Length: 175
Ligand code: FES
Image (cartoon, rainbow, N blue to C red; front, side, top):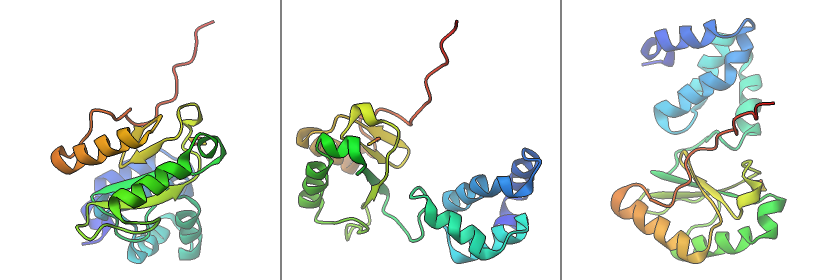
């Protein structure tokens, strides 16, 4: 079943939010990723058709942002920030530690399908590095002990108390 068939109303609601159709590209890509965990070539072609874009235009956007997956990922998608501020406070050690604990490097998934490791650019949490995002949750000020706890929690319960939650912009200060 195509996205248009399955999500007719949701797609219509997304399109209605934007005066220029192509502005709906990112939300439609999110929808496609939510459906399968990654964005298939068929979904890119379909979205291009919906928005009046060429498939390469959609592909360019998908490949520009690390938040879009182009192949299946594990149940828990670990995305470690490798940008400067996190690198200065030890993201390399976190990457090595996860590599040691899970036996996977960047772009790889554990044989049981539980964890995929990706290295990503700044996740806008630069003051609390080293940090990582797993699915929609942030985990900050990481240490080897914290990483062990998080991985163990995810394995046993599917979530961890140590998560910081999804990134939220701070409320504007009143003047
Ligand atoms: S540098 Fe890591 S969150 Fe910004």
